[in-house]
Image (cartoon, rainbow, N blue to C red; front, top):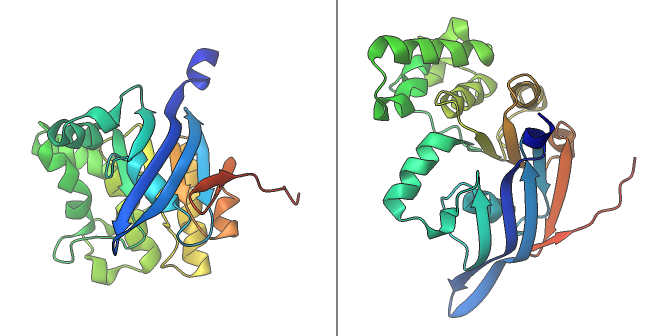
Length: 234
């Protein structure tokens, strides 16, 4: 058991990402090292433009590093073809965005079911999965509601359920409370914390909000593309 607790879900060495911009190179990540263990809840903090979202996108396989090494769940994702990477992502990663990205003409149930349409599950099995995750996020009574009939916090909980429905190994959240009021933000962070503590999900979250970061077990700070040490005030 102790071995699995020390299992590295993410292992990155000297990760560098350079974007060409207006004839110049912009260094978004500069030789970043980061390890994330199974069952961790990590928050990535730093000023705007510090490289937080870039790092999250590379971990998700949405973007590729310019140089350096990254292994996620033991797979060298930067070396995969696009098609293989797409399949890997669908299998292993649940992504939660700042904007909820729900389809307005679909109910909560139908929005959550979307990722399962790419699987071999039949309609009954898909419904069971959807009901389970909507119950986990506290929205069993909102299955037939459309996004316009939900509050912002409820919409984000639907988005979390959609990220969770394929039972991913890793939940990645990019500013999940950024568009929410304080009460709704607290609800979302409680859901993510429960997924980590009760379901054993590994969570990596980008946030600029110290109150959201407090829900994480570990906080890492980025500044100008580098991982930096910040003195604890506690």
